[in-house]
Image (tube, rainbow, N blue to C red; front, side, top):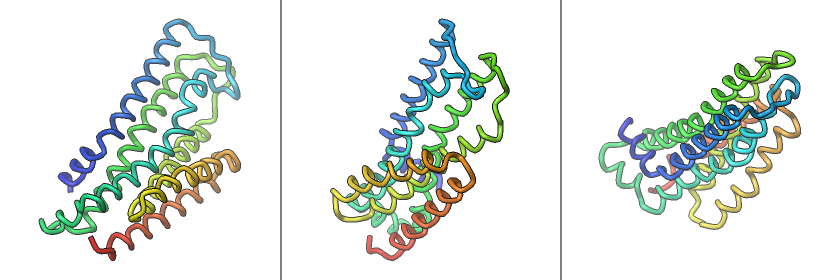
Length: 215
């Protein structure tokens, strides 16, 4: 399994590189702004430097890139007959798909965890007019993670199709709809439940198609 995961990471190296570069840029911006004494006004107890610097990536680029990663993994597998080759080496379809999903989860964690750590550091660095609700911050990052996972799962689902244009259109159209749920419903329990159900349905459907389709 570790070999399969390593192979998936190598195939999706460009996505991990994008995540690493993005995190380095965000971290560099934070360090620079803190070093020059950036004035940070608090909104509901949250330093403005937090949402001005970190807000764009998780809410816009993370879901879109996550969906693209899922579609890329399945499209690459289908086009290059990777699974067809791997099953001849006594590797099961279950192991192959599990490795893809684990790789996707690792990528999402790579993007979400550094932002969460940076936010914790910001809350320690800047004096606040009031202590922010820890439960809200936890729900915020859980929701961001689940949104990315939902988009990734959708990418897996449509990436297995033989058409080339449909997966791209699906990502462009569906991802903003999933993200808009956060804008409409916020970071509450309903949003979390929806993303969990959507992700479960997409993965189950992907699993069924992958297990039954000819490789």
